[in-house]
Amino acid sequence: MVSVDENILPRIGAHKSIAKGVDQAIDRGLKSTCECLQIFTRPPRRWEPGKTALNENRVRAFIHKAKEANYYDTAIHMPYLPNLSSPDDDLYFKSIKVLQEEITKSDLLKAPYVITHLGSPKEETREFAVKRVAGAIDKAMEVRNSSTMVLLENSTAKRRKWGKSVDDIVEVINTVKEPQHVGICFDTAHAYASGYDISRPEVLHEVFDTIDSLLGKEKVRVIHLNDSKGQLNSGIDHHEHIGKGNIGIQCFQELMQHARFKKISMILETPKDDHINDKTNLDLLRRLRKR
Figure (cartoon, rainbow, N blue to C red):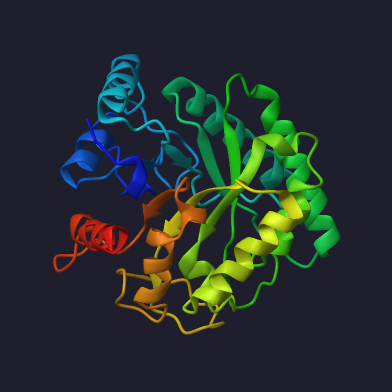
């Protein structure tokens, strides 16, 4: 079991592979000293789900191991191909179907969160995009049988404005039929590359003050902890190890220490390389958390 002193929250973890079975992600998480977990339930760049990763035995093992590890806040990340704001009806309804499948899997795995980006409306308006994403979520949530929340993640792109702003996410949440079942996953690297200078703790708090004032507290359920190789407002989505990029260590120290963040699950999506691994990043975050 992963034991975390309630006085030194937030819980910190990482994205882990489900290769050779969904339950193997928990074994990998424990090996890396994760306190919480994020997974894909299918190959992220394919529409088709994997054939064996979620068979009945693997699912049963996942639930057992997750309980033993105290991974009660596992997040499922949507694959990259779906586009919930697409003006192309074929792609749009195919994307809704995948979101429905991921919500069903979250119930199956007893994982409370499904994380998705807002997608791209191409040349359509922001108003179109808001209605498109809200409609997709409303339709997908019809299969919801448990306490699953869909979390909308801020994104970044050089040539696209939609989906970068906290205001975009707020408007979608205020448009869906059941906003109580929709929350936010805040990605630090995406925010920085989109123009939020969260390298300064006061700006980080301004962003969360805005969310709190528009949606109420506790809407942010997951934070993706990523430093940024890209410069401020560069639109470049290149993640970096904690404290090694342009955001710098102050932001992450504030996330580890300030009381407002203590109930938010925090997930690394930092690079996988031979020099710095998830455990190294998590050890650094724990040192920051204890100061």
